[in-house]
Amino acid sequence: MAKIINGEIGQFVPWYDTDGNEINVSDGGIIYVDGVYHWYGMQLRDLPARGGGQGGQTTLTGVAMYASTDLEHWRYEGIILSCVNEPGHELCGPMRFERPKIIYNAKTKKFVLWYHYVGYPGDHGFTEGTAEAGVAVCDTVNGAYQWQGHCRPIDEKGLVRDNTVYQDRDGSAYYIYDRQVGDDRCLHIVKLSEDYLSFTKEYRRLDVAFWREAAAVVYRNGYYYMITSDLTSWAFNQAKYFRAKALFGPWEDMGDPCVGDEDQKTFHSQTTFIFKVEGRDDLYIHMAERHNTESFLHCSYIWLPIDFHDDDTLSLTYQKEWTI
Ligand code: DGJ
Image 1 (cartoon, protein in one colour):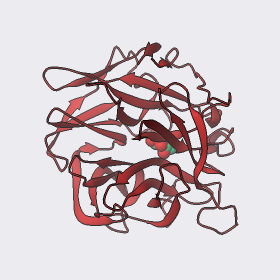
Image 2 (cartoon, helix red, strand yellow; image 1 turned 120 degrees about the vertical axis):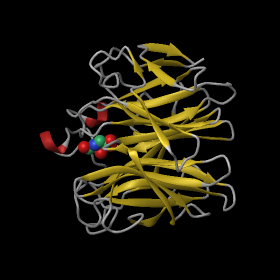
Image 3 (tube, helix red, strand yellow; image 1 turned 180 degrees about the horizontal axis):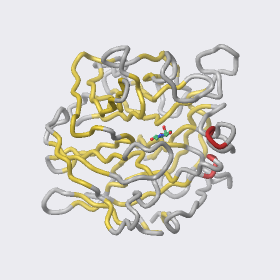
Image 4 (cartoon, protein in one colour; image 1 turned 120 degrees about the horizontal axis):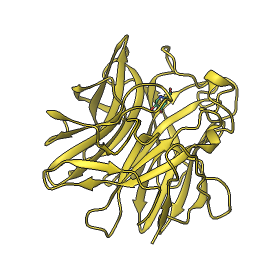
């Protein structure tokens, strides 16, 4: 039984690893392999966001991972995709491996890690190397991942902003991202190649998901669900979810999933990932992050069970603490 402590809405609650250090895995996800949950994300710095200071939204180290068998006790596994601290190197920090997501390719027997790549100095921008999709690959889940480069899906003019990856039940996988062309920002879904290391030409623009980011996808009982945020930089905003019978759509706008969310700010958090608890028929956890723009080391993690209803809708209700 794992105890999840989210704290009061607005409160920053540290989660600690088994060495007593604060868990630091920004905007990542969870992958379950051979009885072990692996939780990973970008390792941030103890600094404010660049707008108010020195760039705590960036990393000097890379993507970190923790392991647990019970979802409560997390052992630090180290950096699985590392920055390369040589000036001029494409992985030289401060930079961003933003919203990293790992999937396993059963055909190639490789773990594949996609992320939104933002090169040095790690600020969002419009030039090459500031708005791209990056990929790395590894034989084992916990590293070391080998960087394979970065590029833009669909075409060069579409900047990559927030991204996620979704692996479907038939083994096909999809890169989902907020594509920006000037003022036009809209979620797009692109099918990955069989080895998951590149993009195919099959894609859809999800018009219904205009001006949305922070997407996470889950499938249940005949429907795909995609939970997203609005687009207000680090400021918390109102979540919205979409539902579809097929990944390429059509997707329906289902509104805000948050129940009793008084100021409509997703309980002061932003979606990062959804995962299923193994061995439990119907327990899916919505992972979100409460960004701490004063010190990015002290962001906090907000985990809530997703409530699915008989009419194939879903909702999220805040719980200060709960037990899995
Ligand atoms: C919102 C995104 O979801 C975050 O990951 C981050 O990119 C911020 N925007 C930066 O402003």
